[in-house]
Figure 1 (cartoon, rainbow, N blue to C red):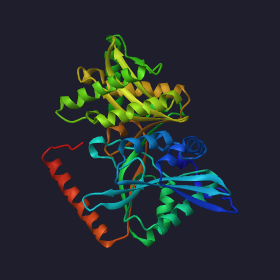
Figure 2: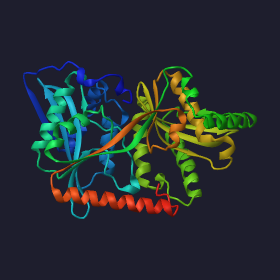
Figure 3: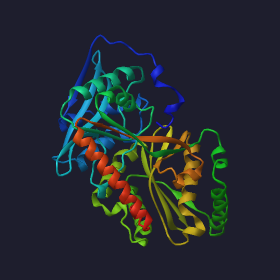
Length: 392
């Protein structure tokens, strides 16, 4: 997914079908029945990230949708072959119940925020132009939404093409926000040379301390019975860090935790998810929760012991061990995913790509209301930063 920039999908040969058909799925039972067809199509596409699997998106729908969410999944057929899927929903938001068109996988309450990343339209490579065109036509012809919103978009996503083709018809906003951080693994130990000088120095010092203490061991989930134990270790270490700061951790949300238990149950047997536990002398000091495709490991969540954190740098060393493990497994990328431009992730010598938030508005009032809220949010954020309050 993060290697999309290695070629330009706009130069792909486009087939011309005799017949094109777009079906809209609004029934959860039909969504449920699409599992194997959906995942097979995704596996043949450029968009094969875990966040676009049927397993992730259907589980999200089971846990977080309610009466204000309506499925609007587009199935694009060329000569009766399924060649594209746009996993969309319409969500009624706020006290005014404004209808926002967005991808399935986002829109849950802030307290339960899952953060599904790299959401996009799915398409067979040779049919991408056709699929983008059909999604754009549906977007313009469907009058049931007021605001279209798409977060964390790269310029080589299909939804970027869709947006560019229809934006002239609406009040539009393209906002550069976060960045995506990816460690390339294909060139041996080159990633180590790309670490910042301060990061290398601190890692070397912490690794000497770990060696003196007996070394850091890595433990993976070995069978399904390990899932609950490993997840609980992750939760405990994550909460230890945040509660020590008198802050709420994401695993304080019981629904968030149940969601990820279910994701691990679905994806661990396929080799697409796992929790790695790191220990020193049988004491657990760090945990990483990662998602996997054939060529990419996605770092999703973590926790570490606060005791001796400065001495052992448990999270940084856990990342280095997991990077090496995935490199040995033949993966090409270790994706740290999104972060601010000044994120600690840049210390790992990552390739960085700008991410954008895309907005389309059908009504002038909604556009102005959005701009007002965005400006107000910036002022509040600046004030909180000024007084030393970190909302994250």
